[in-house]
Length: 105
Image (cartoon, rainbow, N blue to C red; front, side, top):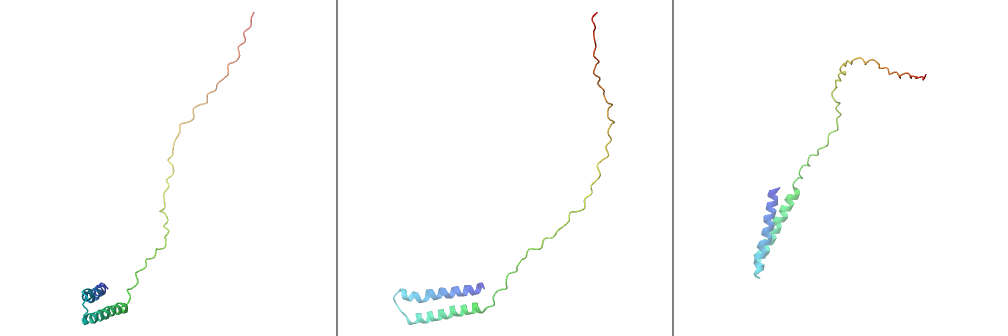
């Protein structure tokens, strides 16, 4: 494809440069018209050749894969460690003191 583009660019450059070189000097030559027609034929032929080439294959289409559910691995939960506690302390009883009566004699 790049060769076709390069050839078309060279042909277009020749078409632009050659016929105008004589016209810029105000000196019209009969050969300039022939070169212009020849350049037009070359550019037209390149355009027809480029248009008749088969189109490039379509680009591959990448599709997002379907999501996959993965279950978490089975977990082992160890039982809590056996803890031994000391027995509770004995209860403490608080007694209210008995009232003391003082008698005067």
